[in-house]
Length: 180
Image (cartoon, rainbow, N blue to C red):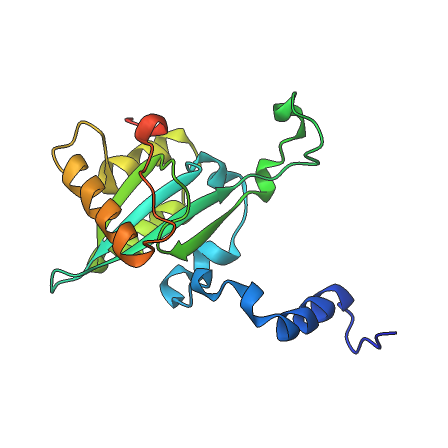
């Protein structure tokens, strides 16, 4: 019984639902930060080099920081099978989601970037084409487990998580943390 007015009825229908269910919008995950627009609108095989979950600390000149999660969304032809995943992968459709705060309990890498270098960090992700480019990204902006800044940063991220989302915050499991 709905009379659609556009050529995209699915989008139109979802917009109608969104208007009726404001609490389901999870607005805290809407980034609304134009600095990340390019990552939010791109897709492709280069993103397949990114880890599943990365936490990003963007430090300001005044000593404050902002925290973000960068999530790698893997694309598949279908997800109805548990095995032979590689046969169903479509890496050219992979994309990233950037949200304020923390999503995920198993971070694979921490990135620490000053606000002045954020544009270069984002450009390095956009231009990534192979494993060597990803290694260079981690070398320039990542914090390896062997880095003396690793534990202080991990503690800072955890403290921020507890302060920001005390009801859902839990320990980060660093078992899947990369050290390349």
